[in-house]
Image (cartoon, rainbow, N blue to C red):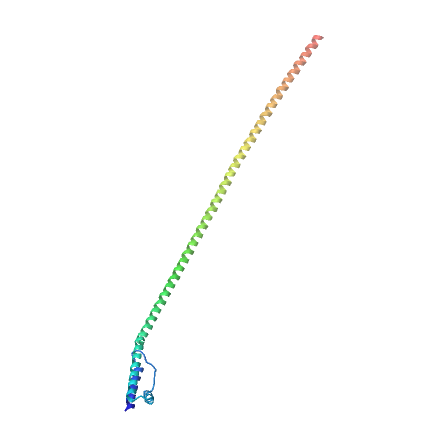
Length: 204
């Protein structure tokens, strides 16, 4: 009778220990052996049943209290699945942001390179224009120098012609003076010779 009661109590304790809302414990002990030890220690059958019942209640309350602090497997699985979904979503957002940033950086790089090419082309055009302007200015300056040189050469030629003309006039004037001097000398000589002849005639 006592053994059957102990067996029933043990089965109740095992049921409480093994089955709960979200937790299965692995605490196993022999209720019959515990009852025998209690009786060997001086406990009566009633006292042993009371101890086993109290122990059953304590264990049940402990397991119930522990069960309330635990998470059900379904809830844990749902939370794990939600975390996986959130992680996948976060990973997708991060990849999207990374792709967007990469695209923006690539577009910015392409824009900068396009601006650099445009500036390089503008710089080449400006250099070409500057070189063309310099060449034009040099050609104009050379033309102006040639024109001035031609003008100076013409003036020099005119001056040479004028000098030659003046020299010719001077020579002509000198020749005329020489001719006049010669005429004067001839006239003087002729007059002197005539006077001498007249004087000789008078003397003779």
